[in-house]
Length: 186
Image (cartoon, rainbow, N blue to C red; front, side):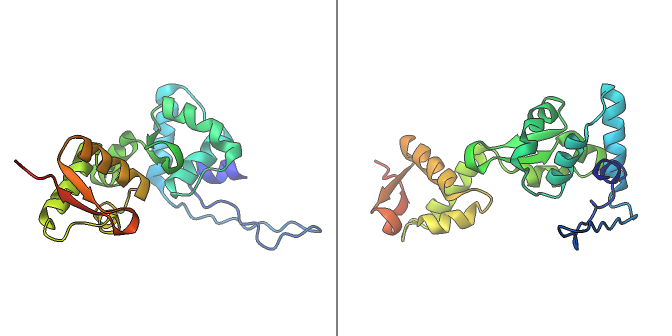
């Protein structure tokens, strides 16, 4: 059921109303995204590969920006190797998006760039610019998370540490009271 729904780009079956004595399944026949369907068909033909039900479930979850459950995570590496999905960041903040190729196929390369996010050096440049712009009062970590809302607080702290090691910024204070300033030029 799942495989057919996803292959036809239809919503997944709805099992609301199911209990321990009966199963209630609702199917919706409306195609959600025919372009996604055509993309999967094209990839399958090009690679002479077929997608398993698990692959299709993973792709559907990634497209919907939903987390991939543990039991399906082993499919991520194969989909990444086939360049159908891409990994963004590592560790706890790991995210997956559909590939650049998918967004190019849709003619939405700008959406890809937005979802992919900025590279590390661009993120550091934005943080440094903010710190320079507000050098009189300094910048707290809470403000800096507003500059790059797509990053976690931990990721921003790592960028700040790099900027500090490069000698571009300095920190005064500790914990929540800490403020970041441009390095003192001599």
